[in-house]
Image 1 (tube, rainbow, N blue to C red):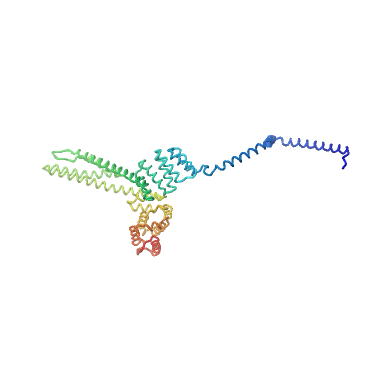
Image 2: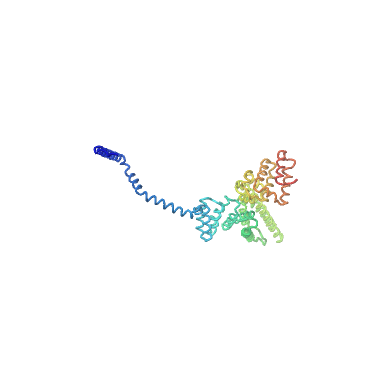
Length: 444
């Protein structure tokens, strides 16, 4: 193949130079347009020059990641469970403040009854009894069958002087776990403290009463050789003290004392005119006895009124319970008045019973509720039937019925025969109650 003519080569070279010049001009033009982005271009240039080092860094990171993947597990990531376990370790080391911090973080991740109860135990160790009580209450709001929460709240309440509430917690825990020896011991200790407190209060009242009676006796003076009960003012004061204990109004006491005082005064004047000291002293004794009887009757009457007012106020303050514990505590507190128990039951929706009791319904409570329903069956049959139906929806109801004592079964059968299914029951309700009789396993 022949070589090009020198003239042709010269032309080719000239064309190359022209192309090079055009390329240089286009670059200058682009440079003007790209000038505002000069800083960005420098960054790109730097990244281009450092491409090798970046690639090396990525390789090193991949190597470290693959090496650490064998050590990194889900347990190493902080969560509610890991914080709770760390809190347990601190508790074992008696580092209670650190344990509280861990339990608090666990609760922040995911609140649980166990975390609250464990933090309560740490608070007990630090003698922060109010915080411990509050945490136990939160635990029971999440799980109302958590025995440790009842036990620890019982301890906190005992230290706070809430002995009655402490006993209630221990009793409820025992119903959930009757053979727990530790809770039995706890219950016995708190009950003993509560009984001692009641005795101290009673003895204090008795001492104050005796001191008042001694003051009245010392105030008696002798007139013409005869004892004369002229200490009417001190008698009024003694009556006033007694009246304060039963929330008696001042006006009522004054009226009672004025009547008693006038009668006693008349008797004393008559006795002063009698001859012979024996007759006069007997008259004074009778007047004293009459005064005591009148005082006793007036106190009892006013105490009865105060109790009636207290019951009325208690009915106003009854709120619907949210847990089996709340229901049973309120139920026992109202055990002396069936009408208030009826009120408690009526403020509790029948449909709420399965959710309230869950697995905590006891045989005695079931029987008592049925007896309570029987008291208003005639007036509100529809509502009464709803309560009986919803009780059967409580978890473990069938097992509860299966293990009822013969006495409890006899009580339920008597209620069914004498109240629910007697001749006065309308046919529509009688059919429903006959079906419920079978569910309650009550043979005719």
